[in-house]
Image 1 (cartoon, rainbow, N blue to C red):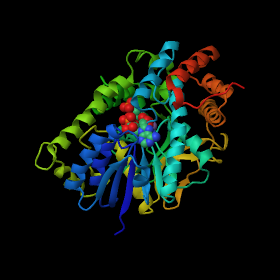
Image 2: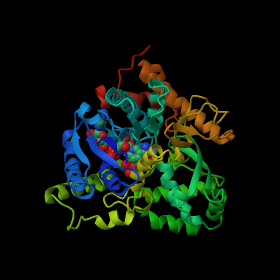
Image 3: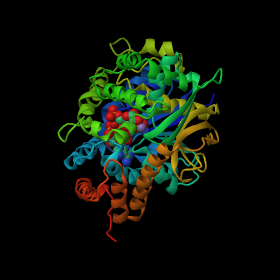
Image 4: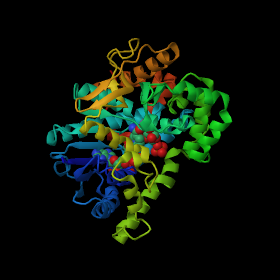
Length: 468
Ligand code: NAD
Ligand code: G6P
Ligand code: MN
């Protein structure tokens, strides 16, 4: 049996422990001989690496595991690189989210001014990382989650044209499928999605039952329209309505009821209901603070506790029952034990499995439009349904975008394209245009103030924008 080598870039990520756990569940379909964590921050990666040593020693027989900050040790001869880096770390996420509130705008990780600030850092670091991986592992499949994924996808498309083994993804559509499919008694593995848009700005147009070929989306929408309270309760049972995602899914349902012909990304809320989203947080408390209190500290505590014990089997951390229940099959794996964000990890692993077994499963990834939606820019990096196999990504034709979605997408693509241009050309004028055209910013004077503050806050993590 062929076995594979995998490097996880951003080894210190809050998502890494769950991902490592799910790798243990998926070993039948995704058999690994080597797992490596790579990060530029040794201190942040240390507890997660120590946890990995215990986990794999006890639950993944024969696998070689280590963690490193050395690029060559990390990348040489890898078959897969899963990438989840955060350029500037969580400290930078904090400022991305806080600064916009000074000027009456939503502060968000990937949308609006915060997303643009993050995009500039991320583009530079992702391009360097892909170059480094390609130097030591020219044939590796690079599957990237790093945000803001739409802007990263636009930039790497230009820098690495035709690299069929470089794939940008997002877990949000997967999460939305898991949230609404129970209404028709289906699991994600039983349907094929149809979706179009930019990342964090897209819409499901179909959920096709693999057995019957029936599109289940109209029935899901009918249930939402006719029994909204039932759907509201189901979503509340899945996501605690006191928390960020619980509130988000309640508002998501309201959005579905306002536009009851498709299932949008939850991130459309930021563009279509900016006033409501603005009221959720303020300059002293944003989603960053919740993440630090929640997932951020939970993951660190979990890993540190296991590293201290030096074992999991026979302790309260024993996951033998889970592993036996999954029987090596990711679709059977019960939820991960750490941060419960298992969709994130499961989706990465599902893509890798579809590639190595050439299953050609239909997954949602980012791909160049090239006529998939003929009335949108052919260069737009669409998030869309594609077959995924040994040959890479083969998109499925979509058709014309309706006027509303077309208008929104053209506006946002102008923003993302201008931002990538600005970074590549170090052009202040285009930077100002990117900020101003963004639906969440809108005003030139506000854009100028935001840029001035972000220039200071980002320092040399931003390129130097020349005024022409
Ligand atoms: P995090 O800050 O906890 O982890 C990111 C890690 O990346 C840190 O340990 C950091 O030191 C490391 N890092 C930063 N720059 C690096 C570089 N140039 N090379 C190697 N390592 C580097 O962040 P997190 O909350 O766990 O999120 C990780 C990333 O995954 C973020 O970009 C986040 O937006 C993204 N994400 C994307 C999706 C999606 O749907 N696309 C879903 C979840 C998370
Ligand atoms: C979803 C999105 C990601 C985003 C994450 C943020 O998974 O698809 O792109 O990074 O949420 O979640 P957080 O819990 O960190 O705010
Ligand atoms: Mn995402």
